[in-house]
Amino acid sequence: MAKWEIKNKKGDYKKMAQVLSIDENVSKILINRDINTRRKVRNYLNSELENLNDFSKMKDVDKAVKILNNNIDKEKKITIYGDYDVDGVCSTTILYKGLKLLTQNINYYIPDRETEGYGLNKKAIKKIKEEGSNLIITCDNGIVSFEEVELAKELGMDVIIIDHHDTGEKIPKADSVINAKQEQCEFKFKEMCAGGVSYRFIKYYFAKRNVELINHDELLVFSMIATFCDVVDLKEDNRIIAAKGLEILNRNRNINLGLSKLMLKKKIYDKKIEEDRIGFIIGPTINAVGRLEIASIAVDLFVSESPSECDEMSKLLVDLNEERKKLTKVAYESILEKVKANKLYEKDIIVVYGDVHESIAGIVAGRIKDYFYRPTLVLTKGSDGLKGSARSIPPCNIFKVMNSNKELFSKFGGHSMAAGFSISEENYKVLSSRLNETSELKEEDFIETIFFENEIKIENITFELAEKLHRLYPYGKGNREPLFISKQMMVNEIKIIEDKNTIIFTFNIGNTFRKIKGITFGKVELFYNLLDRKYDEIEVSKIKKGILRNIDLKINTVYSIAINEYNGNKSVQILIKDIKID
Image (cartoon, rainbow, N blue to C red):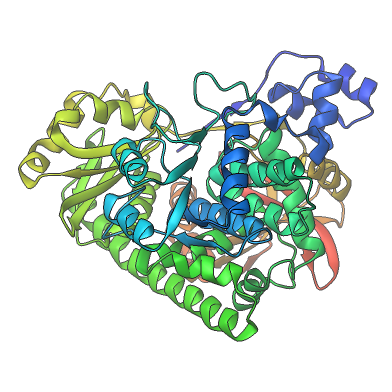
């Protein structure tokens, strides 16, 4: 069971609430996020484009402007070299649709996930040169492509790198490298994804050229999608891009033909688009085409102006995502059974091999990690040997653990919470023992900690409070949705939907006639276990049969407060993250 701990950073939230005329709950949340001055609060609550950091401070940006001007003015061919995930697709779309306003001599190239892998490759560079390109602009890749950039230069091409990944001690010898993580870069904000950097670059380039960027809002929407889906911190520029992009998309669902067709196919065109629909519906559907087909199809969809083509391609993306879901379900169940049967969960770090499509190994690893709350590596047979993906928990820097055993891996890369790798079959045999020998995890590390902002009484959960909290929106990494706890909540009704792993609670509010609904996903098994400890078998069996009313049950919950919209009506509800029964 998870631990619940209160966030309690120092600060006089009552005084700040009074001075700034904001709700005390909102004030406490802001202080917990180190937003504790009038200027910080103003910028946080008012996400406006004029508050974006000065992009002229980005290293090499003016070099890139000159290179682009030279190639466009001389009508030379330009190729944008992207990547097969959402960030790569959106970055490619932004650069292509922006520069297409100035030149027709432009195309894009997305590498195949399985046959080419991530980043620039020499075969593709030679092909791009043969097809007449004079300039390659990378996006979401390139910062570690030393030999590939050298080849492009030997072939006489210009190279601009637009990337956001961590840099090493050396930088490829491209003509311009736009990456805020370079040591000499003075651009203040270092945490944008490639979609964010690409949007800022196009916006800057058009301003320098003194030309109106007539599709600015469309490009901002794709930057927003990339920002949510690449799970970067929703702070400063990222928060502004995310908030304004959502605002534009909700105001104009037809901002991009391909995207509107995709939303129609996913049945969310007429619904309010918030971060969950970007991260859990639109993002995975874009990603699926790169996992099971060629990601350039997604870019084709977003740059097409043909309704019939967009209909066909959006259907393909949706169908591929459904296939990806089925593959994931089968793989997850198989791997879960293997972990349980072999008691691999007794190790600090779970290492498991299975028949998993290599493109979904990371998804499966993430789900196994969530189930057992242990770092997990899932391996499978790839086209050129064993490949795997790792997902971790906050107390374990999985990249550091792998790096201390780097001689085992043919290739690996990633960060503290996720990594990908290749390994020989011989080294796989000792992988689990070696990783676990170097693990420094303690027993308490395997208990998830859920941090909440405050304890509040159920009668204080009101629609007015939900509206005040909505000012902190959008939520995501670095700006997590605020959580609260309430204890001894009197349950009036329970509806369990087992096939969707969903529970809907209705709670009484004191002695009033007012009630409030709470919904939780993925907690059915946990709830049954809690009930088994408190009630006899007959009572529990009644609850498991479906809807149960007027029961004598009080529960403690940690939850977020949300506004539910249904048939034009709005009401407050709680989204339950965890449950305990005293």
